[in-house]
Image 1 (cartoon, rainbow, N blue to C red):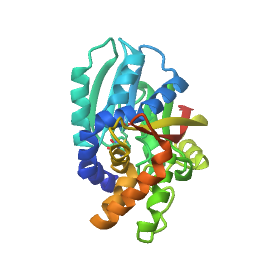
Image 2: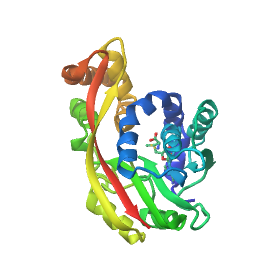
Image 3: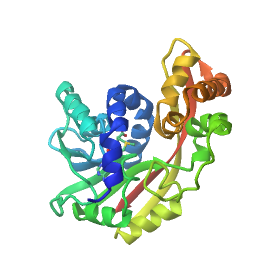
Length: 282
Ligand SMILES: C[S@@+](CC[C@H](N)C(=O)[O-])C[C@H]1O[C@@H](n2cnc3c(N)ncnc32)[C@H](O)[C@@H]1O
């Protein structure tokens, strides 16, 4: 099966935990969705696919932007996240494009050829074992004048929301094995040269990659401890913390609290996220 490790990952504890916290994640990642939508400014009434749609918050935002007469198909491999997305669609009443969700691997699913105008994704395209084959497959679904628009993370060191806590817990971690920087995962597309190469090899043209910084706010909370708890339950930091013993985890946590004190005010830890806005044409 393609992307077996990711299938397991997003259907296991991580997917369940994200689904439970999806309202928080939706608020946290909303600025990235807005930046991406501003960049691609989708025309009303078009048909789109949201790749790796997760809990669907940005699927609904995209559907509102496209408006009635259009459609958005949210695809994902994670059952817990899709079930959250389906609930969200039931409870959202507005003049929006038709929304449907489908559990499938976006890299291999046989989409109807030449059937959509836009391939869209907020942080859902960095997890393919074979990204060139995945994007080539997705490209078939685009109409001849269709476009691709997604956002992905820039390098970890530029992302305060991961770099500051990471520096704070580093001395508590076992020696880290050097990973392939392009291995499937949130930072696989950190190098823009690699992203261009993948998309061009998949057949896309006119690739444009623009840096953008977005606010990442953890909270609201009654105290910094609660805000830092949210942060240390999110993404790769959560994974690193989970592997520590209870005692060391507690000390690492206090280290993060201390490091983020200057960023805490009004119940929020305010950090920044460094992303690429990527667009291309069929
Ligand atoms: C970081 S989450 C982003 C979710 C959502 N786009 C958001 O911004 O809230 C990545 C999502 O990609 C999905 N995903 C990973 N590999 C996938 C694949 N091959 N096909 C479809 N979805 C995939 C995961 O299940 C997960 O929901």
